[in-house]
Length: 338
Image (cartoon, rainbow, N blue to C red; front, side, top):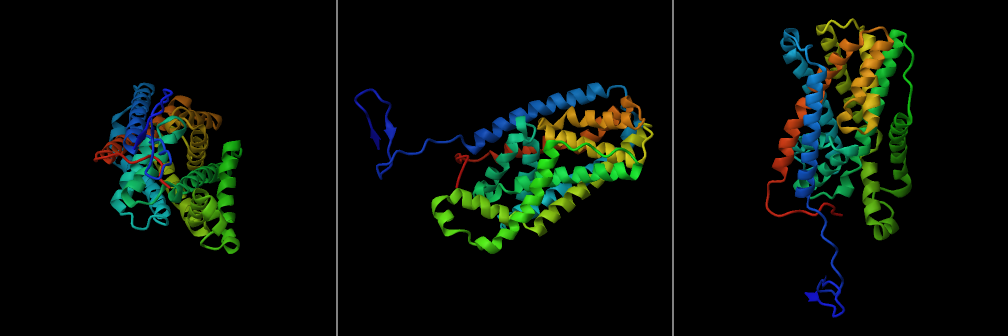
């Protein structure tokens, strides 16, 4: 019912209990579609700049190698999806693989938003499918992010050691990622102190915090964390081989160790930059690394652009199509549900 104030105050919606209703938050549909529009614009800019920067370097040899490059890019995405699916099904065991893939690729596309904030919306889409609240599943995100950072660090370090190059400089963002992964492993040991059901006082007073905490315990135990790191390293292996193949095709003399170091640095710089897709930062890191070990910068740029096209840009349209499909339904769900 409504209650009108005679003093000119706007009417307030009142529940039958007499308490004012909470304001309605934007729907998942509106938020996903807005993020998809932003991601589509970022994709258009990224693909256009990639094509312009690499104009004149696209050759028949690259087209001949295209099936192998797509296969390696698919392998990278496959291992990333495996990591996501294993982690998220620890909190949403009823999630089907097909729905999981759709949500994963949607989140991948929505990372092309400022600060990659659109990636959080995949947990709202997950709730639409499974009914599991965001607070129970969002802990997957820091595990994924930490595994990505640590895997790129390990790859870059391995390349530097194998090739006798200078070890990569570690910035604050990389340290945070490594410490986060270690912290998640240590957090799992707190089960013995709190028990699997959590602290009853915490449940009663702060249910949201309790859900977040139990989500971290579920995905932050040694088994899931090590599996996440293993999947990340497998994805990096596919990407390093892909980059090496592209470097060979564009006649960029680069040893396997040099290719490993360059690709590892691209992930370290691009991953912590929070730029949409890491565009510019990742490619710049490859060029700077290759140039520092005696490679030709112009060819390094071409190799970086083609490799990023195979690992990032060709997957964005698929994710955007899934994002639009995910919002085709009657009604609108509130963005946050606890």
